[in-house]
Image (cartoon, rainbow, N blue to C red; front, top):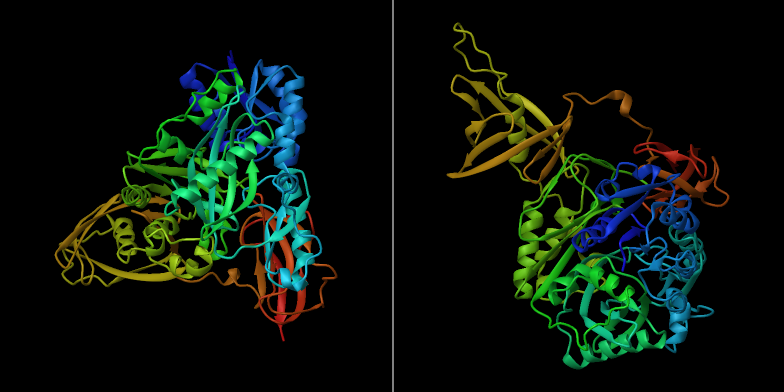
Length: 613
């Protein structure tokens, strides 16, 4: 019987596992890096053990440190969560060798399936050897891990070498294993997977299907269960293949078998020997707690002969601190306030006042809606996201709402190319046109002071804001009757609430200010100075860091005075476990190179200057 459990992970998944442990009466132990010293998962655990350092390789990827922490804390079991060491057979063996219970599949099963190359061989498949023009497009893929890291699509043969280097670098950083392989890339397929759960008594459950086709950089954004539009025959085929894969390696515990579906044909992708990020949609549909089942299986309990009956439909959206309009650039800063309406499930590793740093994945939370039908679940989730209070860095919230309401998604005709086709439209600026005026009126509240001698109207006041990348200027004036704005009736205005009436329709605007950052309902504004700061100007062709991070590579042979072409990769930044390519904005000469590999940079730091020819 497990009495104390350590989660060898951080953030949202650690908090989620701890929730089940508390409900089961199991004592919880967290591990944390120096960057996570005050993270939510350390605060909700009964005990927390420090892993000195900040980089994943020095902390959450150090198997020896984590096993030592488990023993020192008195834990009798270890749950790996997902990512990091969750699919590392050597870590599983180290846990077992220390006399601890491993909440996961046997190390031999992990070893057989965690490497995607070996998994394909087990399923009678093989990656591509020497790639030719006829094989294009191809996908370079990390052999270990998941989450879209270490993946690159290659459409031109001359790009393959650089893609291999970049994928190896990112995979080594994220998983401690730089092995990659190449496989054919199926255009516009659907990403469909099957959740499995197996015990030590020979029972294997196939818990329905999930569709995870909406992806950015091969990382899932919106997932749902069951996968819509699949024929009964294809569904049964996917279930049978998933069970076959599990039985082939004597699998135990929770796992996921992933496929790419094109028409009525399924292509095996991989088996993830761990809990998936999107497991809550399966829990909602089948009415079970997969973490509780993992623990029961690890304790030797048998599953029922058949899984529970599926009911309704569930949809999950991953909320990221990132800017989809700027190549998904991760965002950092303080999450001042975070709340979602009742009626949806929230899994998160953050709460009000927490800092979003640069060291780890930028996912803030997962929101899950369950309803009798798909249409109702999608509507429910979109509405909850739209009404959520999110005060802090830029997020992908608007993108999620628009994606859920896009006709291609609502009609279940989406595939993995959804964002390639629609990203521009989905990220068009769409801030509330009256939000800047509400911000200005809230700021102006109480500033008007008239003496008895004054009988002329005041001059119009002007405020400037930046919203969704656009600069907006608003005007209002103080009068004896209060604040006025052209075309709008100001019903009420104070520092926290502004009520405006436009064409007979009254609307409330809640205004919250954090320095120059202002949140008006769901619109995020930045107050701009009346006059631009001349010292903030940079030379034409300046390349500024779009995010805080580390310079991991500079292009071979690149130095000041080198001729470059528009779009040519110059250097790579690593932030939040992803590599970001910085390219030349124009054809010309590199007149300045201000960074070297290993250097830490902040947002807006000057990286290089390209002097256009």
